[in-house]
Image 1: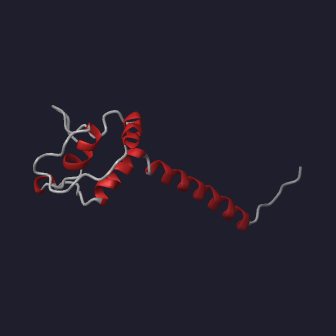
Image 2 (image 1 turned 30 degrees about the vertical axis):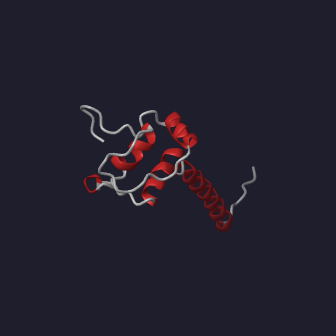
Image 3 (image 1 turned 180 degrees about the horizontal axis):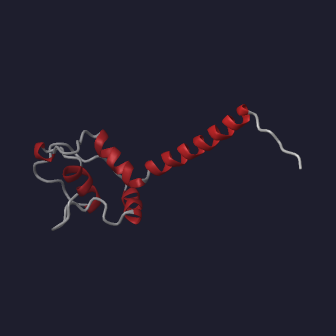
Length: 107
């Protein structure tokens, strides 16, 4: 039986190729429809945890977009333009995304 030696350079190239493939797939998953909605809100100036100031990420932006409702009266920034197709795609993956806090549930 004959053994084939793999050079360190070939081994490193193989591992690097696997790593790059895995990283690219992770980036595609991270840019899913729900994450795109959150990114649109963040880019519009909404900030996680700042709902009292009127520009909270979830209460003033994500929740109204996902529910198809108006923003709270205290919201001081307009909602970003998000296509209904993106909302539907997000809902298909995560049916309860952007539903806000429900009784007895922490967010």
